[in-house]
Image (cartoon, rainbow, N blue to C red; front, side, top):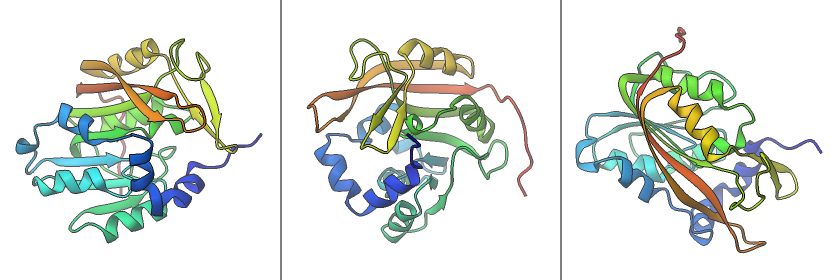
Length: 219
């Protein structure tokens, strides 16, 4: 089966995304609050990857951060811009290099979006590239394992036309440890699978000190 682009899925979900997120018991805010002191983000440059309708971007901007949001879905970006003030939202596919110069951001956030990518290493290398030397990365990733829905399968089909790609906790840890000087790690629940009543299982990483692998000019 040839899977459809996540853009198609999230374009279709854009109008009801925030309500659906609540129904599925998935909230990004607890992860943001665990990683960041909101009172100290004023003036910091933040990239919100997989920004959706801009909820996290608006929270950080309200505390004085300079936020840019990117998402594969034009519909998500349109709604995010419509609901926000003074925040830039860009449509971008993470299979392409990020359209930002080296060291552009102090903080990069990617919550529950990387499981739609079959090749994760080049994306994380790009994250390292656009972060400052002492930059912080907050990521939440779906993991596979014996205690997870779908077991140890590295990819699972859902909604008939899409695939989520997963790594084990150990694989995720190795991937990040190779790219950051320090990584804090925690198992966290993901979202509710309505068809089974199970919760997907995630890992949350708070990583600092990116090891930049490559440099590229952005014109």
